[in-house]
Structures are given as C-alpha cells and as structure tokens.
Image 1: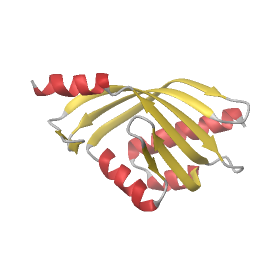
Image 2: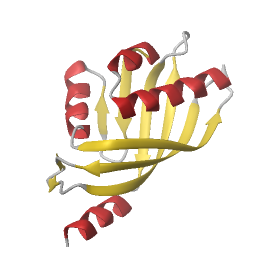
Image 3: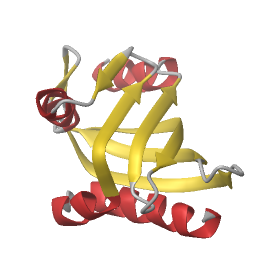
Image 4: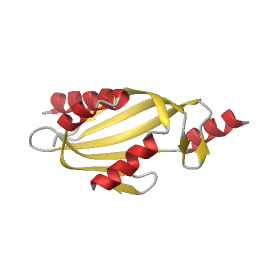
Length: 138
C-alpha cells in the first residue's frame, strides 16, 4: 500500500502542474476534502473546491518537487514539497506582476480502499512567501 500511495501522490502533483483534470478525477476519490490549515479553509463541496481552484488560478508555471515522502502504517502519506510558481493574477489582495516565488509546504494525504486520495491537508508558513511577494513589488 505504501509505495502505491506515494506513487499516487506524485501523479497527483504532476496532474496539478499540468492542470490535468482527467488524471485528477482518477486519483481523487469520492468525498475528497482539501484542508488548508494555514488559512483554516476546508473545501469538500464542489463550490468550495471551485473557490479554492479559482484562488490557485492566480498562479502559473507551477512546479512541485517532493523533497521527502513518508508513508505511515495505515497508508497515510506525508510529503514535504518545494513549490515554485509565478503570480500572474491576484492572490489574497496581492496583484501579480509575474513574481516567481518558492514555497515550502507539508501535506498529509489519506486514501480510500481503492487507493484514491480522499483527504489532503496542507500546512505552510506563509511568512517567507509574503516576504518574497513584498520584495518583488518594491
């Protein structure tokens, strides 16, 4: 279960980079829930997920590098990620001027019996990100 779940997480991030919704639909299970512990957002209903997707639309040239992946005995996968992307739209009242930023993120993935992602929890210290965005506008 462990290596397969890690492979699913890697496939998930490749699909996010390409905005490949066909692959995402295959690796994400029914009742999928995204929890952003940084902003206290919980998205599970289609309209919540759409709002989260629209916020992410402000970013382009997204690249996710999994720096470390660990699988728990229950199949849960924890990953440390370096995300590099460009702010081209407006994100949380910050107008994009093609600022390229690097984010360090920790995510926890839980799976259903078929090995599909059903819970994605994200943790991020946004201070470094905000510093990068502020420095780019000076």
